[in-house]
Length: 71
Image (cartoon, rainbow, N blue to C red; front, side, top):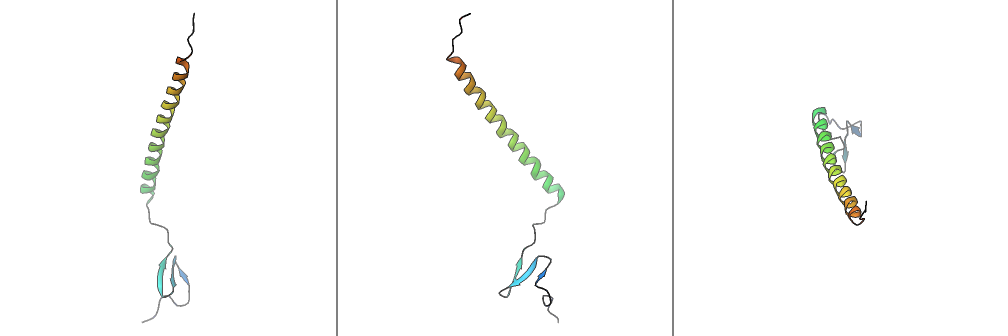
């Protein structure tokens, strides 16, 4: 039986450190899963922007209430 880790320190993101096999590979994620994650992030950001816009408009209206215009 041969040792598969001899001859190379790093094989596809795996390496041996202090007698232990260390994994430096990226997490496996499909393109569909990435797209779904990006879509949910965009939806969340849209909601945050809508709430911030509403707060800003409310503050502007509060400032306009103090000004009484006589026409």
